[in-house]
Structures are given as structure tokens and as C-alpha cells.
Image (cartoon, rainbow, N blue to C red; front, side, top):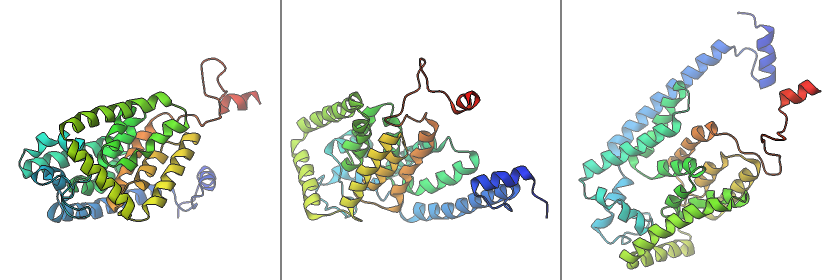
Length: 304
């Protein structure tokens, strides 16, 4: 057995890594884990492609083929979002189902690929394969992950959450807690404009959607302890905003999702892009500036 050098032993002690886990073995384990994920996720992707392709997207494509809110929740092809979303994608619904599902699934896959791009190549492909079932089934979780990322720099993106899965707009609390009041205006104004135009065109649909929301809230027609999950999402965003931890927002969006499935976890695809952003300062701590900037640890150590 090859002896371990002192530097490796010291690094292992600091990171709580077993001393026998040499860098070569760590690389071998990483490659083995990545390969296992690729094989398992690839197999599941084939199953989805065969049996569940477009199972969620079909509800959007077929929304105008019946009374928009005529199919009860939890039934296949039930449409649950604001009328504005169905109106915006109406041109796509005029395509054949085959064309629609190819465009929809392709778009969701492209969104996931962009979100995961900062990952090293070793983990990019396994992560993309893990997200692919969600893209093939065609829910909007890829777009919600995109909203989380874009929303920090373009807050108007949160209007999408307000017009689809309303409770996932819990991420807007980030701006409330941090006192960034101007960031709240773009999503509210954008959602109000789109909703206003939509309401003028079909006020009956908006009345039906409000009735659907009220009925779901009064009957508790949600899954997996939704009120508790929503409360947890609120607490998590508040803590994350105070501590400057952006990763809490996609986690909170998952918790606040009205219906929680395994595919909802793909909203975590937002994390690589969020990790690549500069970390915001925690509240109550001095911000770095040109004048009077807080000294770095290296400088402080040198002075000491």
C-alpha cells in the first residue's frame, strides 16, 4: 500500500476525510458515482420517454379543447394556472401534439442545460440526465428554476410564478426582508399588466380560476402537508435573506409548490448558477466598498 504523505494526512484531518481516501481513490469514486447516475438516470429517462412523455405538457396543449377549468384537479389534463398562461401559449397549442411536445420538451431541456452549465463536465451530464424526466413530462419546474436565477437580477421574472404556481412566489420575500422595495415593483406591475389584458379578454375565466383557488384552499386539496411546507418556505427565505444565502430560495420554492413530487426537486438545478453569482452580504454586516472597505482575512492576518 502506498504510504500517505503528511500534506494529504493534514488535509484529510481538516476536511474529516478518511486518510485512506487518497486523491486517486477520490477521483475513482467520483467517476464511479457519476457513471452509476448516468446509467440509472438514463434507464429512467427511457422509461419516461416510452410511457409518460408529455404527461403534464398535454394539459397545456389541450387546455383550449375543453372548458379551461372543467376538468377537476388531480385528473389528467386538468389545467390549474391563471388564464393568462394558457392565453400566452395559445399559438403553440395550434400545433400538432407531436410538434408541441418536441418543442416543449426541447425548451425545458435547454433551460436545464443552461442552468447546470457551471458544473464540471463530470457532473453536468449526470445532473442533466436526472433533470431530463421532468423535461420529458413537461411540467414548468425548469421555468421556475430559471425564474429563481433570473429573478435576482431581473425581478420581473417572478411574474411567471405569480401567474402559474402562485405559492412559489414566496421567493419575493427575499426582497421584502432585505428592504429592496424597488425590486418588488417589476414583478407586480408585469403580472398586473398581463392579468389586466387577460381579464379584459376573458373575465369569466379569471372568475373560474379564483373559484378553483378558493375551493382548493377550503378543501385542503393539496398534497404532503402543504400549509406546513409553505410556513417552512417562508421561514427559510427570511433566514436566507438575512444571511445572504441565495440557495434557500430554490429550496423554499420546492417547499411552497402546491403539489410536491420527486420531479419538483429539479428546481435545485438553479443552484449552479446561483453559486456562480457573488454572494450578497448578510444583513447587519458591513458591505465592502471602495472607501472604508472591510479588510480581508489575509490583510487582517498580516496586520496581526
